[in-house]
Amino acid sequence: MSEYNLSAWLIMMAVSLTAACALFSVSARKRMALSSGRAAVLGGSVFVLSVLLGTLGAKLFYFLFRIFYLIDLGAGAFWLSLRMEELSYYGGVAGVTLAVFLAAKCFRLPSRPALNAFAAAGALLAAAARFAEAFLFPTGLGAYLDDVLPFPLAVSIVYSEDYTESILAVYNFEGLISLIAFVLALVRRDEPRRFLRTLFYLCLPQILLESLRTDAINLLFVHIEQLLCYLFVEGVLVWYGWRWNRKRFASWIPALTGLVVCGLTVMEEFMLEGKILLNGAFIPQWVTYGMMAAGLAAVAAAEHLGNRRLLQRPA
Image (cartoon, rainbow, N blue to C red; front, side, top):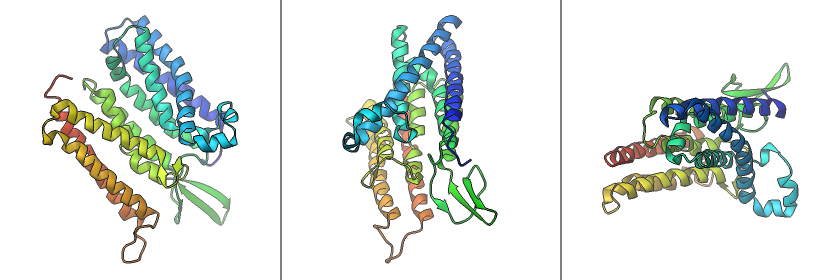
C-alpha cells in the first residue's frame, strides 16, 4: 500500500480502540470483580478519555520535542491541526495510559490492577496503531531497498511496468512486535507487574526499530522517541534494583547492563551514520543492526533477572 488515506486510518483506529476497550471491560470484570455494567461503563470511559488524552499526548510530546522549530513557525497553527506527521506515537501511548489511570480513579478503583487489566488491550491497540500506518504513506517506512521485496516486508511503488521501488515497511515489524507483547500479556494474565512489563517489551524493540524509520522525530542526530524508549527501559531496570535491595551491588546488574547497552547503541548509531569506520570502510548495516539486536537481547535477559528477583518480594 502506497497512498495516504486519513479516513481509512481514522476508521481503523476507531474500530481498534473499541475492540481494545471491550477487551479491557472483560478483563476488568474478571480481574477486579466488577459487575458487567460497571465494567462496561469503565471501558466506555477509557474510550472517551483515550481519544482526548491520546491525541493531546501525541500533540504535546511532539510540541516539546520540536518546540523551538514550532514556535518559529507559529505554535497556534500546530495546535489547531491534526497532521499525522506532527504526532508522537509514544505521546499517544502516555495519553492512553493516563486515560486508564484517571478512569480508575473516577470509579474509585485501584489504579495498578486497572492498568494490569488493560495490558493486553493496550498492546493490541498499539499493534493496530502501527499496522494502521499503512494508510499514512510515507509514515512508518524505512530505507529504499536494492531488491523488490513482497508485502508485508516492504511496500512497492510502481512507476512503470519496468521500474518498481521497494521501501522497508518498518510499521509492520513494529506491529508484529506489539502483537507478540499482546500474546505474552494474555498468557501472563496473573503477572503482578503485567502492565509495566508489557510496556517494557513494547519499548525495548523500538530502540532498534526507531533507527530504521526515516520519519523518526530527530534532534540533530538523536532519535527522540528512541531515546524516550531507552529512558523508560532503563528506568524500569533501575526501579528493579532499588526495589529488590538497593544496598547490594548485584541488585544493580540489570541497570548497569542497560547503561552499557546504551553506550553501545550510541556507538552503533555513529556506525550507521558512517562516523565510525572499520579500516576506513563503511561497516555493513546488517552487522550494526545485529550488534544492536544482541544488546537489546542482553537487556531483555537483564529485565527477566530483575523481575525474577523481585518476585521473591511482595509486588
